[in-house]
Image (cartoon, rainbow, N blue to C red):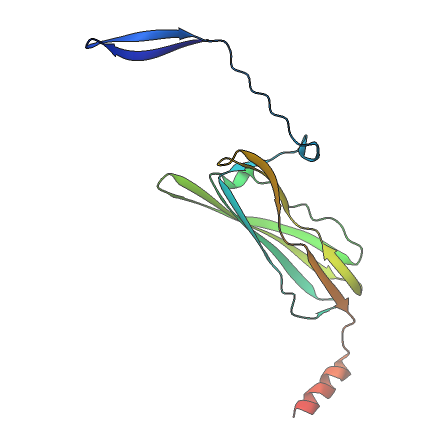
Amino acid sequence: MELKVPVMEQGVRRDLIALTEPLSIEVTLPAELSGVSYVPASSIRMKSKWNSEIAYVLGQIVEQEVLVEAEGVLPVAFPDWGVPSIDGLKSQVLPSISDLSASRGAVTATLNFRARHRLEQTGTYALSPYQINWWDTERHVLTRIESESVQFDVLEAESESDNLRRWFELI
């Protein structure tokens, strides 16, 4: 490979030509990350939105959200959220909402991944987290970051007579 470097020698500008051997880099990934895609970013933060304080009942429709904020990357670099099929839940992945901002040369991508679930059977459920393999461009380390996993119970829906009785008790 030939490399031209401009230099000043005794007030005269001239090109210094350097010849180099081709540069090769070998990267060995950990076995569990071999063959997987990753997102290069200087930082990534992830937050789940799920209301775990309410009682979920049969027939209810609930929404799960994962908010991702990453610096040094465009929103299109992120993998889609593949919500696995779970018996007892009818799930639908909604279109993600993305935003891109730049300040002083730093690019920040914000993504909001959403899924809607219809609760069709009673029982205990666990929703798998959203995972990203992330190449930290600051520390030069490949890691995996994931949202919080969600666990919840689905109860039988109360009958209308139970709801009416509760209203009369309040009066």
